[in-house]
Length: 518
Length: 109
Image 1 (tube, rainbow over the protein chains, first blue to last red):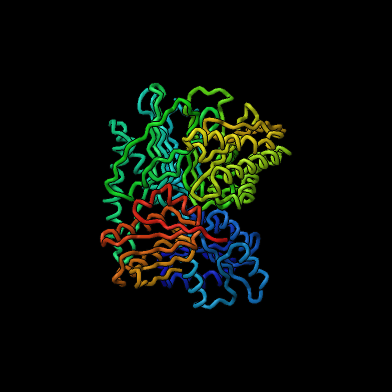
Image 2 (image 1 turned 90 degrees about the vertical axis):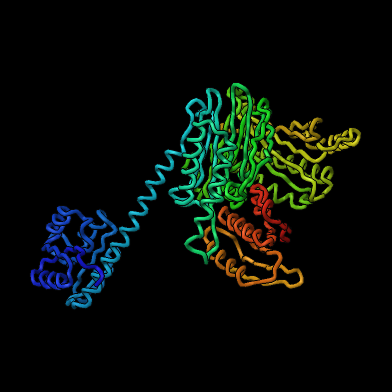
């Protein structure tokens, strides 16, 4: 029998039965405690500590408290501890109650030695496995708690400028966001996403964050830090990953990084994107601009040379970014990822949980205010951002349904009839752009964006297209005139105009919401 | 499910993966691919067919990059075939086209 020196307790008010079972089990090398009542059994267990026992063997029928009462107490105190109930022959109903109550097994009287040995052996093994699993689970939970402490590093001075949402797939994850102070008015927003979403990912994440903080203290640049860690992942990590298992495919770790350095004194913004989905800038007029410059994730290409890009910060209000977990989730839910960002950043975790059930990855979203002072009318939040190839005018219904679902996620039914106006306007403007400007070609793209301003209580829809690239002034004027004529019908329910500078259509829909969004 | 075949005319080793490429199946597929690369000879390019995939996570991406690196050492190019717009999006922002050729053919619904 595998479980030598294991400790068990036998409980039976029948002295002869108690002695028989105890002697039989002692002969197997087990450490046996005896009790002739549930009250006595509880005393013995509590005195030594329930964790010292690996099995409880108890008769069902006893005066005062029954074996089922003891089972209930054991289940509450230590659910991993296996309990075996002894019943009289033919007491099927008691057997069922015992098993439903959490008993691992039952033995029918008269008990034969072989059945007793097998049942006990199995019970002890089960207890050990359950306790080992419980320890690992607890350890992971605690690691996750420490993980959250380190991930929440934020420079206090700019804490009010950051809004973020983080949902790890398991107790620990590889996504993180830190806001670190570099100088008096200079801050680094460092967001990351390690491949995978397990303890290994959390380890790589913590390692990088510690390294980055240390090197920043020593005045290393973000380019140097990123380059150094790329070398570590390519050389040290990748090489050690396959040494022990040459028959398997070498699997490495990678890290996507988005580093944004804001200097509020010099009014500059430097950004370095390695593998993150393109981040977005929202300007003070509500226009969304994707930032397309970047590099592959760290750990992919050794010797990559990194350079931060400078962005003109003056017209900008916000930086909005998310890990690919958000994009996957939005695809699964058939929502626009911008709407999902808004929803998750602005709703309670209870509400978010129902949406996150279908998540297949860690989700991290953050929005950082780039202008410390923003008027209320400069505070826009993007709701929809879509880039549509010209040939997809044929599936405009699909896009419209997605926009409807996205807007309903945020506003529920509070938009009322205005929802139809917004959808109709967006659809018509998009079709105009796709057919006239994009000429129905897959290679020509139009972008549609919807932004919400709570202070102005409106939703603005912008539709931009390749006409913006036309340098021939005459041709551009001709196209703008054609659009002006075509959008006349849209004027009846929105303030609709053409933005000459971008050859784009702009529609403003004044809302009449019953309640303000929080 | 994963299977492979050599196309003699183009000297391509084609590996077809049925379904998604995720952290949950990457090890199994990786072992198969490694064995196939060791056993097959005479190929000048490896084509990974992910046309039936809807999801490609970061671990799956890493596997493709590791494959590209192994093939680069043998002067063999890697081509990845996809037909899901969301997977194409993931490949674009991760810039995997720096290590492999991406071939996109929109799925006909």
